[in-house]
Length: 116
Length: 110
Image 1 (cartoon, each protein chain N blue to C red):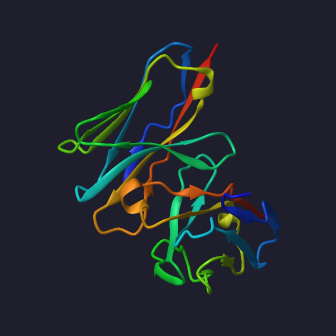
Image 2: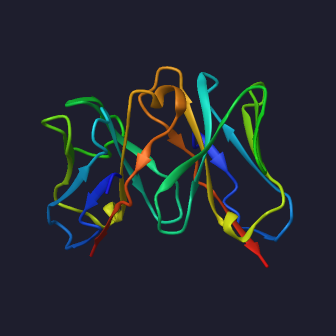
């Protein structure tokens, strides 16, 4: 489809395992965001890319979280040594630079991570 | 204190009712304001921007009060399909992100 695609949709990990979540943005979208959404909460900002450059990673909660977008398209969010508090839906969003004015981000359906 | 605060609800209203949601933001340097809608277990989607002069889109009216750092969304003639969580969203002047509130859940009943 033409939308933002995320995989896996569901991931169950044992505490201490590493996980990798993938995001395929809409073709041509230079801006890419990762958000974390806990149950019953709003999305919380994690990090922002413009093309391959990670311009803001102020929302990453710890050094266990790492994101990359090496070729300015697909992005991966990696969480090392997962903890139970990492359980959440991880949302990826992409947009043209026009988001600065329009406020419109196009979200994927998210990757639901459950850490046991 | 969260940067963007909303009453979580739920607001339970009958079809045809008028309902209003409020949102407050803490950073006076915030520049742009939006409402997003998120259906259960789905992704958030932009509903409308919020302009200083207030703006309307069909049954939806958004208003901004910069002095009070307060944003509102009014829904007239509620439909069953309006049932969702409404997220108040703020962009700061120099920020690289949209900051989301916790959301207000609306349930419209027949």
